[in-house]
Image (tube, rainbow, N blue to C red; front, side, top):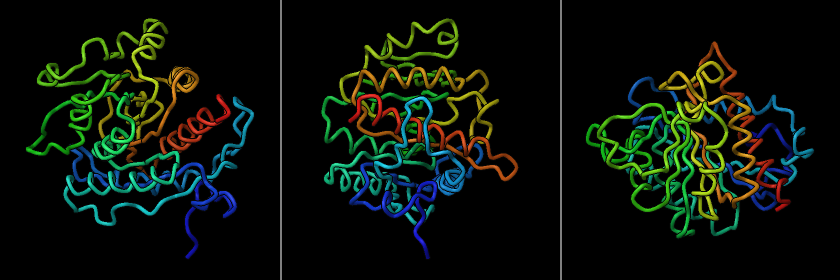
Length: 288
């Protein structure tokens, strides 16, 4: 059986030794609270990647030539506990950090980010977290589980500077866990672009990015588990990310909560385009 590669790229650009980037798929959705199905997100993502054009117009680059290695998934059973999944993600990332790779993840529900942030935070003590999401995800527990996707940023909020972008839904119990001045709500974002500079100024030098696809408006990303109206559009989001990559050192990122729909494939493709665009920004803007 031929090993899957990103976009079907050749072995020359997809072995661990030759690749600068590692992509870790985490097909886990046991903590989702409305519609499940994001465990199929990594599979749909890789399937959609076969149809992406590998030349990026904006950066005049073919970033895949720097190598993208698809790692074995840290889990092979969606029924394991969320705590165990977090531990496995954490340990897997640590392994690749020791190999000096740029590590990215595709989920799966947002609970996978707890393990991601633990691992990156251990290596980079002054790390800040850039969280792009419709939901604030700051509950200490949900349905008795501190590793629920609704709790994905709670642990991070106690340890790191947490900058949250695109928020438009939260429970009142989460307000006391907010980092004052670090939340950029959608109703404020739509007024003008001044929020971008403010948000970037709050980030430390080294940044981990966690992106929930539901941050985007459902009109362009309908295949998600918990859609919220009034989200980010494509070019506003790219404008912001480009500025972040120009000014900060991004140490890794994850993309989560893609919930494939057999009748709608545009969200799968959006996730792939976003992933490839972020890699293009990572390597081409600073020529790192």
